[in-house]
Image (tube, rainbow, N blue to C red; front, side):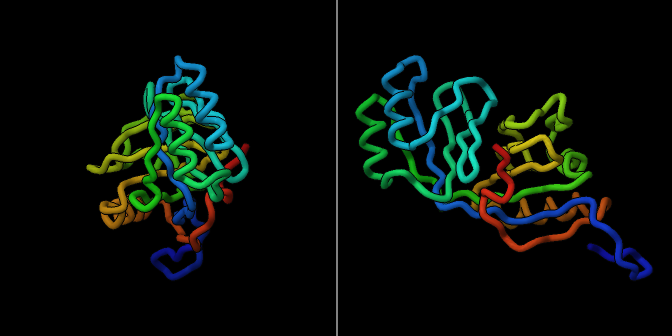
Length: 195
């Protein structure tokens, strides 16, 4: 809830909140090599999407396509320790990097979520152009960001480098002011994932 100029309580059209996750691992490799895909799945306990802009969503983890040879795996728990996963993926000609502490994520949810994001981000964010499960690199104002739609509801996840988090958060709140927004306590990633 927010207050209008007269002080009356009004319903917020957007809710902003920080998302927590334990693991953010960048996976690199050649998806044309079946051995790499098998080893990556074994190491992560999770399948990597192979189509541009696609994701693979579960209840507590997801993998996002970042490029032809790059993915982001986000999870609350890892099936195996990072060093074991790295060795397994390296053995198949890939690479694994732990970027857990270098990123921050927020959810932007509510009836005006797409409109609010479009004040900062040039992507077409309606359901037809940016359907559930879609992810893409873009800009959030002047900041490089990863935008992800976890389900069909009007809810988006935005990730930026931690060093730019303050600027990104300020931009999101400013963009949401016109529609009215509320902030909520941080929630685990599973709070917005819709497998």
